[in-house]
Amino acid sequence: MNKRIVIIGGGPGGYVAAIRAAQLGAEVHLVEADRLGGTCLNVGCIPTKSLLHTAQLYREVQKGGLIGLKADNVRVDWPVLQSRKQATVTRLVKGVESLLKANKVTVHKGQAALKDARTVIVSGETEKEVAADIIVLATGSEPVKLNFPGAELPGVIDSTAALSLPSVPTSLVIVGGGVVGIEFAALYSALGARVTVVELLPEILPPVDGEIAVKVRQELTRQGVTFLTGARLTEVRQGDGALTALVEAGGKVEEVTGEYVLVAVGRRPRTQGLGLEAVGVALDRGRITVDEHFVTTVPGIYAVGDCNGQIMLAHAASAQGIAAVEHALGHQAAYYPQTIPSCIYIQPEVAGVGLTEEEAKKQGIAYKTGLFPLSASGKAVIDGGMSGLVKVIAGEKYGEILGVHIFGPRATDLIGEAALAIRLEATVDELVTTIHGHPTISEALAEAALAVDGKAIHW
Ligand code: FAD
Image (tube, rainbow, N blue to C red):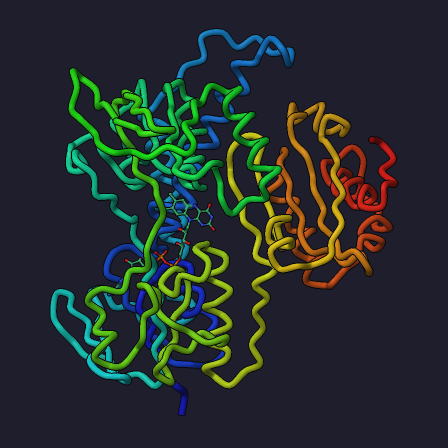
């Protein structure tokens, strides 16, 4: 008899797991409390990139004279940006609905909780119980809330609210210089807002290779964003028509005004109300504990994506979802976390895969690096991405690719080649003897690999 899998959560972890399980012949039930597609499609990856797309075109067009365009009187039509964003989201959510239907996945609308290790209760319009051989938790995450005086003021918002503001703000204070904060900084500053980023750590983008993070901060500063690093938000006060954020840095308190204060200090796994403790699913600092196959502390119950807190990215959630149901259904599952790229959609783009230099150092790995500045790349000069660079980190003895970090045009697409190189355990030699098209940014990857042994041709 076919196994019955019940998946809780219809984001990229849950819906991809559902489709894979159905392909493998399981009877699949998926419970979603809100909208299919989860955070990613509805209030994360997709709407942010839709808005960023137009914001970046706007910035480009404003350079008109420099690139040989006359585009006078170009203005932002915010309601159209908003409706295009929503239309994109709706189209993709409908796509997920159709895929689930085509794969004969039964979708239950409602809030799910575990009754026991083999029964899920769904509270929707009516309450029902769904029996399961296997349960996959894919409940995602929610924004971390900071507790400071003024946190409840109306203009203090999270990333979801920041996607649907009534108009482009004149000024914005962003608390948190992580990926989400930096994408919103790039978005609203390109659209004309005065943006200040407040980051507690000495540098923005903590998981990004340090050398790249510095370059990103410098470039965004050039684009008009103000950064206060090593700085802590202590309070927000309602001023006259704007909010005043009190920021403590180096023993001094600075006042920064903004129409809104966006708190983007990270996300935490969504695990409340699922009844995990009662069935014995253990949590570690709020994250669902899983083994290498994404099995929780209760056999037959899996947890994938943001809710296990391993790495909060949509493609990681999907890869984990696939690996979990393959394992659950007795198939050989493959999951290579070292090939998970992380991408930031500012202009120029940022992308990295594998070890950063800081991680290689921390792990005591003997490594060498190759750098290629994009000021020496023909395509980057054409595209206006000259402030960027490509960095390759390779093992000292055998030259195996350990990490690749790119700050430049189309970095988020180019990183796929680097991820494949890591997956295939390719060496610097194999990367440089792969011939790259000209003129492309991908040539810079080969040049950075050549630079590992001091042999770059164009630098
Ligand atoms: P989610 O997408 O959060 O889905 C979980 C689903 O479970 C939700 O639909 C929720 O309603 C449902 N659910 C929860 N509890 C229950 C319950 N008890 N019963 C029924 N249903 C339940 N990642 C990227 O890779 N690239 C990006 O560019 C990117 N940009 C982002 C931008 C922003 C502003 C944000 C906030 C996030 C971004 N992310 C990005 C992160 C990405 O959205 C998440 O990593 C991804 O959505 C995680 O997928 P998931 O399936 O684990 O959870």
